[in-house]
Image (cartoon, rainbow, N blue to C red; front, side, top):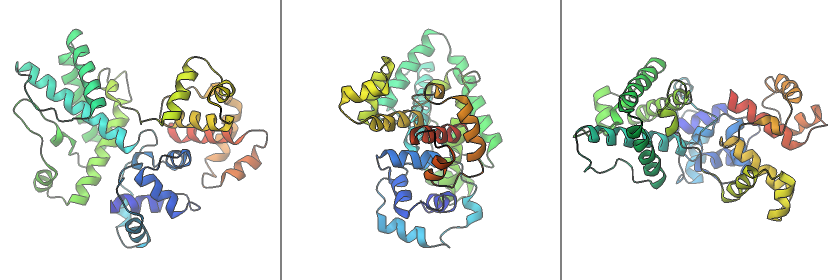
Length: 317
């Protein structure tokens, strides 16, 4: 937790309030918090400590000597997935590995490593798909390739300790710490780095035909989910605002959430390439400016256009 708070402190935009950064860590369900997390490359820290009380956050945040800054800078983050979606994606991989391992030993009587319904559903569907396509060997090859890749990108990889197979249980954090002679804080950092690198790797659907499908996208708010259903039925934002009896900028917030969380990816439907190219050129040297600066630079474009351009830049890295 200390490392995450220190990382946010040293990487957040200078004008952001302590409370807005606290909202990222606890996972406040507001469109502003989603946008803040994505635009500042902090989405993978969103909802990482939902039970953290503000006085505790404030005390750690204000203590400039709480953690070594050089260590803090080695924390990996991603602007495309939340902490929860990363954790759940790994749980799908854990459960798939456990299930296929037990299947190969003709034993399907075991306690699943995850009890989360969406994780179990995705793992179950992928398990039957793998069996039906006779892809158990391919799955095994992808697992070995994935962990070899993680190990090559990170200075010390520990994620493999948390896989479980037939008559083989995963290690606990304490056991891993003792094996690798690392502190609990260091273990948390290394595990987070492995998980982020895992997501970076399995985004490649050509390299990871099966494991790419384990990705669980961040959960949508109920209103954004409803808007998503209308968009899939070719409704415009204006039409949806009438149907839902809300202002159009409310639907714009939903659309931004859908892009931030990866449910939409075709930016050309809302902003043209000419604008984005000009905006990108200006933004990459002025990222810490407030929105009104970008609006002044591109007055013919709405705040929605500007925010979506920022989201695109942030997600594409």
